[in-house]
Amino acid sequence: MIYSRNAFSTTAEVPTVCVEHFEGAPLSFMTTAAALGMRHLTEPAAVVPTTTRTIEQFHRIRLPGAPWRYAVTSNGGNILVDGIPDRHWRVDVDAKVRAGGTTLSEVSAELRGRIDESWVSKFRVADDLFCYLVVRLEAVPDGFLAEWDQWCRERGWSASQQGRKIYTMPRAVCKSVAVAEVRRRLIESGELAQDSSTLAAGDGALDAEMLRAADKAIRPRHGELEQLNWTSPNLTVTQTSGILAGEEIIDWLIAESRPADRAVA
Image 1 (cartoon, rainbow, N blue to C red):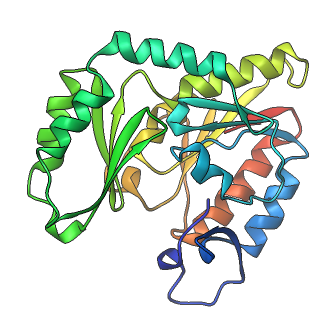
Image 2 (cartoon, rainbow, N blue to C red; image 1 turned 60 degrees about the horizontal axis):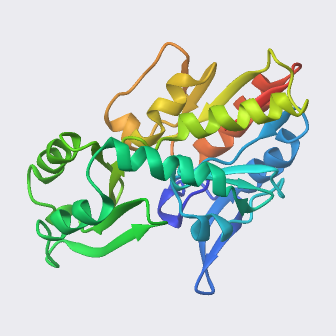
């Protein structure tokens, strides 16, 4: 629901607000209407920002409606409670990753041996959980992603691409499990009714399981899931794409959140 400049409509000027700066420069934006909608969304729903971003990257964002009681970062590897990582959750995740297959260090070493600077501009390890590449799209070798994903899946990991980033992720780390845990806590604390439903939005392959697990879900008409033509019986697809799709998603979430309590991821 936040976008870089290259997601802006080329046919009309759209009023926007900057919600993220990096090294002093504006990086990510929402339409002004989407930003106002985010504030309204917190009234009927318990909003849980859920992202593949690291904890540090998430803290750069200034989303309207903050502060958040809960947030899910690192693709579900971390749950933040009032902005602080839940250590017990992370210990459990690390145990599942160790039991699930190859270690991060072994995967990273293998990946480094398969890449070079002619098409990879950055290699990053994220929150000691997973790694990702920032690539030059036009230079990625044919078949790299499929071959790398096959190697990973045989060892308890997977690979997927979101724009210029190629993620290598333990299969034990997923957003849907973390969102389900936050929902359980909200119900246990009385902040959500037992019969409350879950609404979810996302655009990448790493969001697919979370979208499928939600009672109702929405994705934009762009991104990795659009390229895959991914769908699900509970899924709505926006009419618009780019930054305007973010606005449409917020409107949909507000409409679906009333009148009953909802959890939104």
